[in-house]
Amino acid sequence: MIPIGDSNRRYTTPWVTYALIVLNFVAFLYTVSLPSTPEVVGQNRRGEDLVEVHTDLPDCYGLETVDTEADRFLCRWAFQPAEFFDSVTGATPATGSERWFAVAAIVTAIFLHGGWLHILGNMLFLWVFGDNIEDRLGHATYLLFFLMAGVVASFIQGALAPDSVVPVLGASGAVAGVLGAYLVWFPGATVRVVIPIFVLIFIPIPIPAWIMIGLWFAQNLLSGYATVASTAAEAEQGVAWFAHIGGFLFGMAAAWLVGRRPRRGYR
Image (cartoon, rainbow, N blue to C red):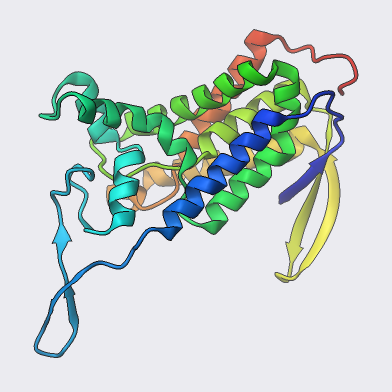
């Protein structure tokens, strides 16, 4: 199901939601503009190009990758659990600004995405659900909430695999926090979704928010369980399901703490 709108009115302009969407797209377009083709270092006897594979790039903390500008950028600003926890505990030889970069990546990773489907999906959910949460919390508090949801989501994902050097990136955990708060405050709202039929046919259907978000969360729980049941190698190559789950639960908890009763005019 793909959400395209909801029934809730908003009473203020969601400037922070708009700014977050723009910032995410700017960061993504900058990322895809970076050279992603490795430098050719020679050819083998069959005339095939050879590229140098690195396991010691200073920004990649042991991740086997090729030396390209795109790799260096993502490795520097995406969240790598092993690097983060080693920097926090002092286990890494890095000092000064390098340690701070590693720690700050748990925030900057929120604004990085791995592909068009990744960013389009996240920004669509943020567009549909973020405005009412911003209206409910206020601009500044909403921004803090969004960032905290993203940080908590990445931390939970990293805590489950603290030795992983695979970068974790994307706004999915923060957007999941928005969904969690929406479920608490507006469970009876109507969400308009489309269901793809035969790829090119889309049927719009209005459904209650609690059903749409509940199905989304159930899918993430099942996928997270499947990840746990898979091998470590398979788990590291997939989606960060536990970031989604952690961000969602944080959003629900924060909404309950703020107060379940929404502003008058909402359903």
